[in-house]
Image (cartoon, rainbow, N blue to C red; front, side, top):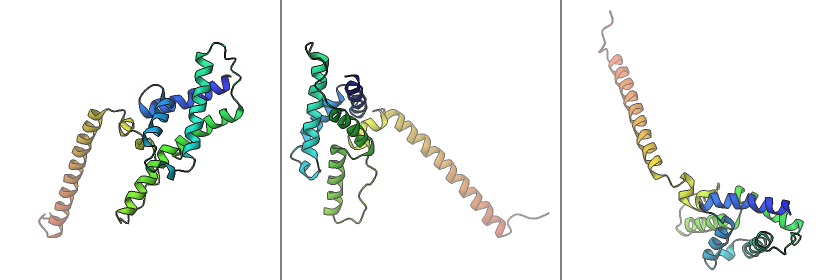
Length: 175
């Protein structure tokens, strides 16, 4: 029983971080439901993963909330699915990430651009605010600091270039 619940909690924690909410597995399932019908069938295994996520969530809910449940209604396949699904999210090969990848690749292709489709799909595709914890002020200040540092660097390069040019034309008198 602990093995199943530990694997479920591990996946739940990851999904909580992705969606910046509790009940992360339920959030993932809801996200899949919201995308159903929008070319989700182009993602191999979409329906199977959706059904399996609902099954393992039901098993977990029964174990936690049903006093008569003795914790034996799961199999090693369920534990393996939870662990594999966790790894697929980490690798960017889970259904929602693949859905986003296929749609972005399709948009690039349909617009006739010669750009390469993205290859390193990550959690930003789930929720752009999750990538910086929703702290826009920090990224704004970081942008300003980065801009100032870049500006100072550019001024330094221009001064060095000016000194080099003036030296080459003999502006500085050698004593």
